[in-house]
Length: 300
Image (cartoon, rainbow, N blue to C red; front, side, top):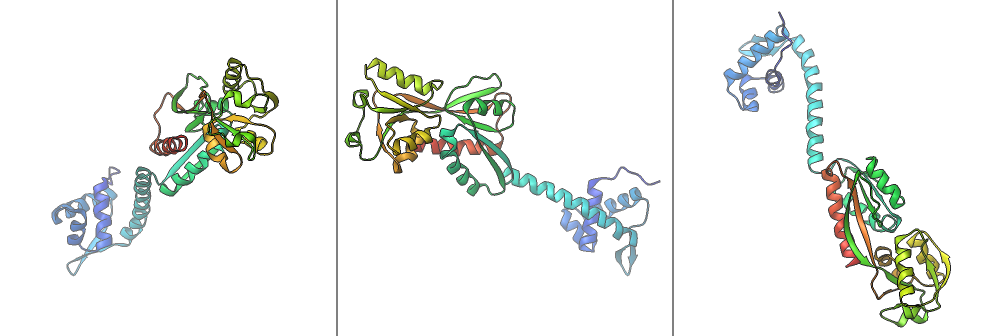
């Protein structure tokens, strides 16, 4: 009676003989002895319940049934080969998907640069880059709708682990040709009565900026607010005023405005957000390594 308890090694012996035509070559391919191959074939033939090979002039010739079965075996082994290839590609980080979310200050210019370099090293990985508020980024990470997030504010969430990646000082930006462009370092007194472009009052950076000017008793003309650092740069470039912005945006703003250090230093952190309950995938971990280095190089 045919048995359904077929062994993979029996199938491999059958496949090797079909491909290499002799027991000797099949044994070499499988790195076993000829008697071992003969035994595997005999057990396989018993298992399937019909004759697979006929001996003709000292050679084993496959029957018509064997040829039909071989077609099915090949389809199965192609599937196994595809699984093995996929595993190899995953190990080499040349296959998979990655969803990254970031606050605008990080996601508009820095992360696209990181993504482009990452794809050059890991072709075959699909990357999705999302730009949202820090609150939304943290929620995406918490719900596992993205793999990693980069935020400029520490938004607490029990399902999210926050790691500070950098803590760089804010930079002062002024329009080209402005009287302050000639100064190497700017201080609160230098900005007395200047039109000032601010972030909304809900931003941590806005509160820190306002506090330092109050402490130094320096009035400003608070004439316009903007939510995005990149928008603040455009407003300053068009002569709307001066501003303090994060170091990441400032690193890319030199073509549009004059960028200067500001004292006293106001530190502005960038955090990595990841799911607290699980570790990063190999692909996500490799991306974080590249992002961490790019961020460090940018604000150094």
